[in-house]
Image (cartoon, rainbow, N blue to C red; front, top):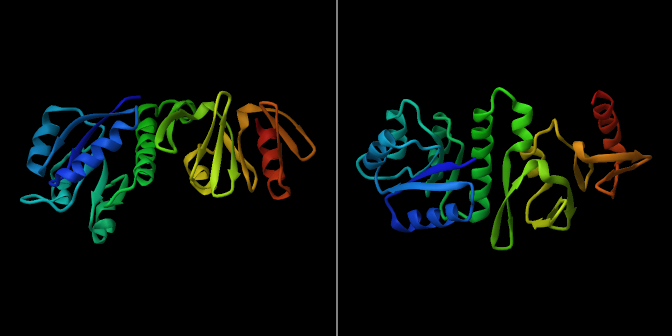
Length: 235
């Protein structure tokens, strides 16, 4: 899935930072950048945009005033130095609200939210297929990877990091289990231990308090076993 993006900000530095971040994520394609809301509205009249990165404090027309003029706006991620407009902006259905200076990790989280919404919109007729076929973004060191959810075998807590295991590679990322619990589709992934989330479709066998995924033996915590067995019985 290719996501066409538009950046709107009256500061060159902010435009350049967002353009750089967009370039690190293969699924995102920069369709344009505008330094004021009037120019952005004109651009939206002639281009199909999936995701809009929108500053709030701009001359002539603010970001929120611009949103009021759009009948069918794209998905919107607010990028601003002002925290006080956060609650009001969510009245317009924005995906996320990023405070400047924006860190790449926070940018990726916001994009993941947008991808989830856009994938759901694109495949409403078959949501179960959509949930496993879409991609999420994982940052490891200075590289951002687009990873198909269906490729994930299991996720393992590793100190202040997480290991995201696939058949071909293990990614080490500075994220939390809570983040992935919210991000991954619950009909495909289940937490079996305080340190492990597994892809249910990749289970090979269960023996006692051990579940085997791609020949990896993973412990099942006592507080998680009942939920796992109920899920297995229903499948």
